[in-house]
Image 1: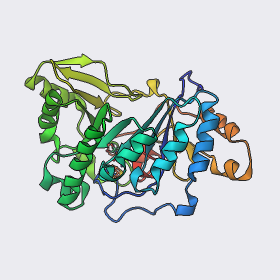
Image 2: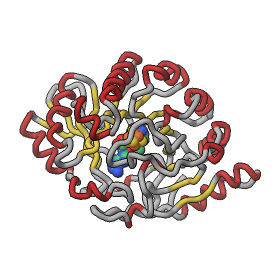
Image 3: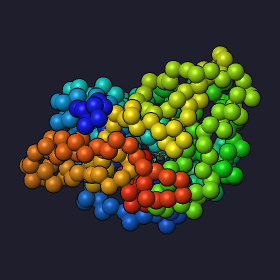
Length: 326
Ligand code: SAM
Ligand code: SF4
């Protein structure tokens, strides 16, 4: 699959739900969002049908996301179905890790190999402010990460959204972990959406972060762990893990974009941001031509996002990334 700018698209991020058991400040309002009614969700069979048709024309990699994908019932069943689609080489999962002790083994057995885990703080008391859930959820997150390591998920990527004055004093602590453990910690720049504009002055460019990290060790550019992402990686001398930066605002990487997104209710989005989306549920349920809709979406894939710090305009009316699968 190619878009109008010649980019090869072989990666689909699938949101299986917009709901979540956390309320990360930058992602979701504390009262939640107007949830998508459950009967609006694509079924696992419908998701698999989309993937099968896309795999016939070059889709190779999948990531399950949300919301929190593990709050959707029987997620391993979906993994099982997707793992059976010819052509699919890689199934990964983005999660906050809380439910991994419950589902980790089943997911691995079903075919998930790689995990991205969100972790914005290493401080128990701070978790309450950042994820707006009691501290026992922090303990559960760490237990989930430990379980992921025990089960042998590799590489293990940790996603940390940086916010000035909230967690940027932990940059060095996160980076130090990579010297001891095979964690790939990726610092993500805060992306503006309709519901997080109150955090606009918390934005922090990852350039300043790298500058700080160079003071605690010899940080060299490095090959990233296996994946499809936009992160740029570095490694301390002799470290088992790495440090990555994801820079949607300070250094645009849209020219390398290889992805599309399928929302929980069956909209295909060719860019995380903006208003471009094509409905697949209609053709799926009426026996219509799904791939015709996919081709139309690809033709309309924008060249780049138009995000601006402090404005919701570039996000195209999106309230939160959890609505479309971050
Ligand atoms: N619940 C899962 C998790 O937290 O990993 C998957 C969904 S979450 C929306 C996916 C990723 O998007 C997380 O790493 C999260 O930190 C990131 N994210 C959400 N909103 C963001 C924002 N406004 N700016 C930057 N990253 C954001
Ligand atoms: Fe939930 Fe992930 Fe959003 Fe946090 S970032 S509220 S864990 S969907």
